Length: 309
Ligand code: SF4
Ligand code: SF4
Image (cartoon, rainbow, N blue to C red; front, side, top):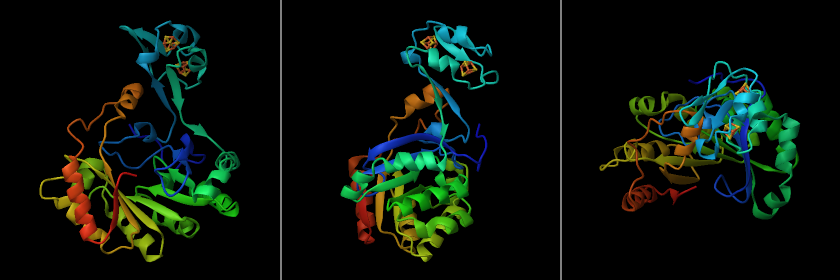
């Protein structure tokens, strides 16, 4: 179940250093926790909720029982040859994690002040300067976090000469984009489906706000790279109907590059660790021929296009 939204003090899932797929050069990518969409193929299920999550890795667990012993809330119990946790009783105190020698237990989501996060980002300034990189604020959905916090962080990066990219699904209030667009060097903007009925079916939300925000960012002269996940069973078909509709939409906006991101399912382990059900088992990666065919359609429309991030 999705919890929260637009809370103060955003939670961070991960700060990934030396990233080379989230914008130009060498970057630090900050993954914020919480997303307004519920894409059936979500690659980062731990980023969906705005609150902290708990992960348990059966593969690493020796069933020693220490976590049961240490949990003061009686939230942990043996379950067949595994360890269960009653979420309603768990206070996410982290005690069982500290005692788990197998590192089988993990809390996902940590809060940072703007100052703390900025300092983490600034540690790699030398790499940004040499490579033309910077920081990418990603998620989850960064534009649905506390916008005062995000604006303050961006301004701090600006003041230190660190280039800022925003990776967004576009489903956030227009006013949030208005606040920060002129302080951001690049938007990595996700477009998943042009057809609104299908968009609702596969992501749980209409694409109306997403397309409106894209047109807005284009109208104010923002640098925009479009990212499109390509998924058999969602937006890839024999007659390329959805892809052609997306190209049609992009013809009316100023776009620098298009990245085509083929579907993969290497995130399945995360669903298991979170105890979540994966609802995209019928989806698959398009063939190499299909990917080349789709790339050709974008090139025909005069877009600079790349398969991959
Ligand atoms: S303490 Fe860790 S290894 Fe031991 S039973 Fe609990 S989760 Fe498994
Ligand atoms: S996080 Fe705390 S309350 Fe939750 S299971 Fe572990 S020890 Fe118990």
